[in-house]
Image 1 (cartoon, rainbow, N blue to C red):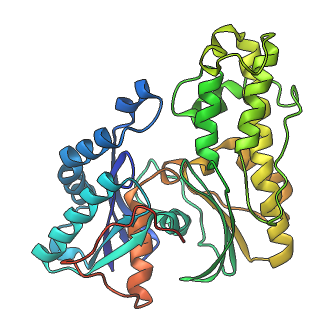
Image 2 (image 1 turned 60 degrees about the vertical axis):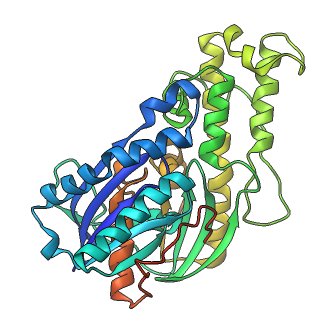
Image 3 (image 1 turned 120 degrees about the vertical axis):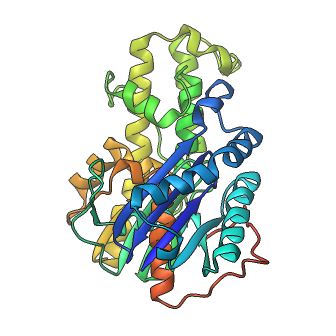
Length: 353
């Protein structure tokens, strides 16, 4: 069984072909991130226009790389939420049209759930990918951390899961972007802070962790504010000093120490909850998913504190990609999940798990 996956929830236009829910045949991605750097974040109109320009070539590239044609494809899977409305619309309309034109069943995929299924890819002949040897076992605990989502989910089986907790404010990746802006590091904040943190002392500053009533929920807005107050203090100014001017007066050493300290506490926040959930539910496996899942500090902390071995997927499959969508599509086919109507499927930008 071979499924074409299409992903356009944000600024990556992606398509991939996956066989039987574990074999990666191709994965093509075009990103418009370079266009957003000067704005310090994603500009939805720019992202949508980029999708229009490249989505057909990207799908064609996925076919070329897999050495397959439409006659070989058994189904199409497409992200219909969550994400930016304009971006989702391009992917869904394209998938609907292709499903009708080539008479293929269409499966609507939850983007956040799709991230988890990147961990089910175990085989490929593509030389640039390093994949886990085995698929996760159920029950499975999934930590999903990205620019738009921070969630802890317990999967009892495919399509049978409980959302244990989620962020009350900023997603983890969003917090990284905002802190990077405070200390004058370029967008996107995740890679910038991770790189700068290598130069600093992670124990330089005692930043706070949020304490919430809900056992498995997260909050990062207080940590973000604490970083701003720390930076203002480091340059000898009060809380009234404009945040946009703080970075100009920070030394490179101060930036490095703030980046390292913030990253440590941010990762401890999600790792603490993950370890707590592990001890309560005793899952057979633990996976991390989403763009922040490629963060080496997060992987280090989890590897040191989890009593079981955790297998990490390739960093290229942590960020948005079509392979994760195609993989989940394969399991939808296998488990007789409902097929979407290609004439009526609509986007759901605020879709949740």
